[in-house]
Image 1 (cartoon, rainbow, N blue to C red):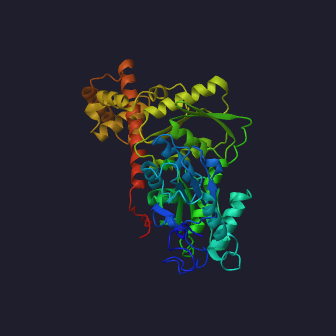
Image 2 (image 1 turned 135 degrees about the horizontal axis):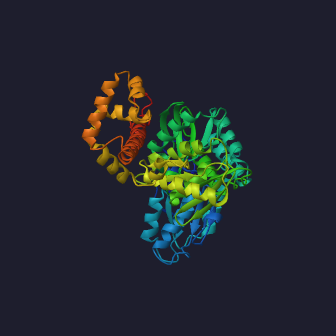
Image 3 (image 1 turned 45 degrees about the vertical axis):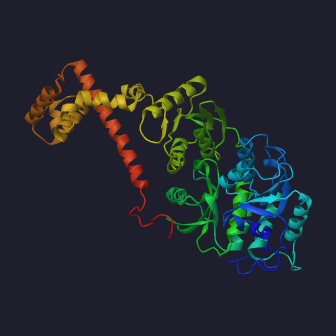
Length: 513
């Protein structure tokens, strides 16, 4: 049965408008007196496979996936409790909420508002309607072969099998494989950072994963059923597994050609994914050489845990972020950069910063290296910055811990008169690179030595510096290194912004129309 079968006049042999009578006879009749207080059309299509009766403020562990949750409000002491309770019910994968009116005589407005915020269909149960009668109705309507004398068929049968498998603790990959076999097309599950939790028959490439995650985030499908998306791997249906923070969404992916009416099956699989996300086993501890990774902020801590979920590690959440000790894979920092960058479209105005030590360092040395890298990430530009400790004793390594604004101001103060002259700036860069030798500079620029001497004289005149004086030369050299370093950061940010721009020229578009 579906949530809408609980509505007066929607049960029995009449089926539901728009579903082709697929569920005719699935429900023995509407529950007398039950009133609907809210529910979006897509949410009313969710499957109901049983009931859970709870009156705890934190009911999550007692709520069944795809259940109708019954509560008498014994948990409610103040209006703020409603948000906490309803959020836990929705996060547990319930299909709908039914609230008894016996205690307060009505369903409080704060409960109604919380249910609306979390997209949870809400019913009022009158004082003279016992919960056990509601449970008995749902049990009869969801029994195998209810109203037909046969076992559930079609999508509803697949939903029932999936939910039975969830109750039995079957692995998520097997559950997704069953759904793929029923639909006749691949099914994949991606985490928020693009980890391929269920890769399907053929794993996506890293570039394909970048594209799919970006377009899934834009589709913002977490508020309803599967959303159509055109991506580098073709047309897809994307069903988001909701989370309080947009940067923590996961996605269920299937080919866009999946049969019509499979929304309930997607919802059930999304519920199974939500349970897996909450109950996944901790990764193994790292062995051998390790890397220490530090991140800023609570969002960063959860993002780091997701990005490292398939890497042996140990993570400790702190008041300001988190510290992870991870196995030193050769590509670990590159992996973190790629996965964390996928969260950028969902971060809003927030920044995601991480610093990693060099592989093989241990104890305080590794922590100090990660701190240096994180300090440099804070000073850098960009919304997602992952830096590795590369402290090799250069001045630039030290100055990268200075805020970008101050580094920019210093570079402009020293180089300002020549920043607009590409020829002079290029000559200065080449001259310094070749040890201030006019001969080698001329050879590198393919010009006469007299031309180099003229340009160097012009540079000294405009900058007010003597390039033969050690102090002046040091200032100019550091300013030029800072200018080039900042220009590289700006170029990277511009590239990211262009990659995110809607309607990119790659022909993939955004969500399918």
